[in-house]
Every structure is written in structure tokens, then in C-alpha cells.
Amino acid sequence: MNANGQNAPSETVETLIRKAMEMRKRSYCPYSEFSVGAALLTEGGRVYGGCNVENAAYSVGICAERTAFVKALSEGERSFTAIAVVGGKEPEAGQYSFPCGECRQFMREFCDPDTFEIIAARSEKDYKRYTLGELLPESFGPGNLV
Ligand code: THU
Image (cartoon, rainbow, N blue to C red; front, side, top):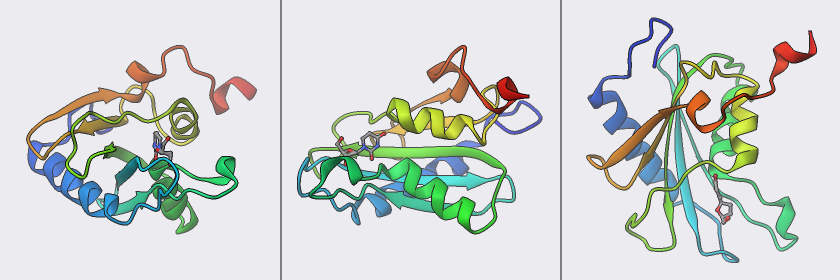
């Protein structure tokens, strides 16, 4: 959803899903064999991709969603509209892959829970969309510390 309360048009959603699928191919996941790709849309219309990158010291690994956010944030981006996520054990997306709790909280730092959209996709045409607030209700964010 954008700042005017409108959902991203379906062509935008499909473009994001395609990018997330491309990113998923770059996943480094020798331990879980669960590959994830993400595509993050900024308010300015740029798209940043990410994949999960695992590590022999398991907890050091990073999720696809946070990879995309860190790439964008480190380039100076601060305003975000939507993220598409694809993932699973099979090469073809057999399931909807949702952001883990840590990723949802990470998004909460930078995204409006009422408008930022999370798109969990199995294919370009088969996806579910939620606001961040729907997936992380009654959340804790920067405003709580003011
Ligand atoms: N993973 C993600 O990339 N995103 C999520 O939100 C859920 C989990 C990754 C982490 C790990 O590399 C693999 O999926 C299995 O947990």
C-alpha cells in the first residue's frame, strides 16, 4: 500500500515477484536447503533484491528480507512501499514463504505498519498480500521510545 492507502498495482506486484524469484537463485543455503529470494520496492520506485546467506556458524546467517533491506538502507534509502518474498525447499515455489519474526521486527523500524505491504508468492499469479501491521500486530517501534 502506498501513502495514499492504495495497494500496489498488480503489474508492480508481478515485477517484484519476478525479481524475488531471480534473487532466490542466488541463495546460499547449504545447511537448510531452504532458498529464499526477496525484492524490496522503495517509495521512489527502486527495487533492491536479496537472498538468504547461511553460515557454518548457523546463527550468523541472514534472511533474504534483511539482506534486501540492508542493501537499500546502506545506499541511503529510508522509505519503502512493499516487499515480495519467495522461498521453499523445492526449486519451484511449492509454499508461501513468510518473513520470520526477526525480519518483521526489522521492517517495523523503517516501515509504516498500516501501509507497507508484504507479498508472499508461490508464482507471479499466485500470491497473498498483507500489511506489515497484519503480520505484526500491536508492535513495538521507534515511536515507543520517544
Ligand atoms: N529465511 C529467510 O531468508 N527468510 C525468512 O523470513 C525465513 C527464513 C531463511 C533463513 C535460513 O537461511 C533458511 O531460510 C531456513 O530457515
